[in-house]
Image (cartoon, rainbow over all chains, first blue to last red; front, side):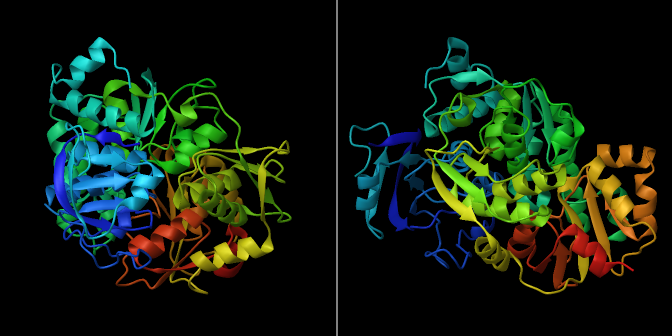
Length: 127
Length: 386
């Protein structure tokens, strides 16, 4: 089941990680590059990607990091999670970054590197 | 999520841009937690006050919205980056940082918050009656409120708590609802645990717990240990509530014994000594300052020791004379800031920090970028004073 947390439209290349993301600390907000060595997308840029990750963790201030990424033009085009958390949901809401939560099966089916479109107004949200 | 007519019109922008933004956040967090409606809250506690964490975009955002935004309910705020009364003693903090921090402080004050600059609002104010709905973004405060204060909050984000402050509302979901069964119990197996053990227990429990855990095998820890537990738990995961209970028959059980404690300790302790000492994350309360003052009788710190407490607690402690002994012993009492994420600790001059705080240890290592020597308060006094 697809749940719309923040509506909108986006397209981009999927960047997928199996690690939860702590936005405060794991991401360089100036460049959008992941600088947490423990993360399996270490050194990759999340800018303009469809960022696919299980859920956010860590500091509640991570919401500001998401907003800063958007202000610095280094934010993902959209985010897709398996479980919604308040930090990512509120950060995306303020930054107007479309955000979806998918069921386990749909989440697992998304392949890293694939180009996808999101349109929360359309009948088929994910293409 | 169902919205009332009034809420829907605010979301549509009919009550201005600030409230539209606030309701957009509440709708997203409501959808995220599958809430069916919004309910009133009567206290919000905000994170996102330290320029170190929110940066230029955050400073600009707050400066802009504070032109129109006013908080609707009692709102307290987290620590800033430093203590304005002592900033001249720290040469490495540049003027840009000071100006931006001042701007953030002024924006919050313009919105009508209580200028507490504290991560321990529960040490400053009398808590409202049991089951009152609040909206706390600081994780240790949310866990304290739910677990020891009898209040109800989810582990809010900086923006969800800000939205609650501006609207007086929050989505009715998860821990705000009446308690359902907690499926997991951590069985405390350490004898005579000190506050460091409780911090490590919290960090361990936060990793394995989901939204709520039971903790068994613990008998009435003191406030210092309780705060350490809340701080540790809030740092490592998503868990926002614990309950001390022995009634755990139908739950999954995980032991926290010597082995688990050592493993957690080794993950956070990266040095066998520190260049300086910090006490307070969470910020120390009045009783903790009183205890510290007694422990320091006739002794002096052999290296710099920064002691963090809220302004309100510092003022009370001064009136009660707890600060004399601490300052005589060489302790520097700092308010409005905390071990976590303060730029007062300069990584280009400091390689490692000694602290008894598990939460402090995590942020010192991962954000400040210094090594950490973790030891209990009694060991700190024994090893670091003469």
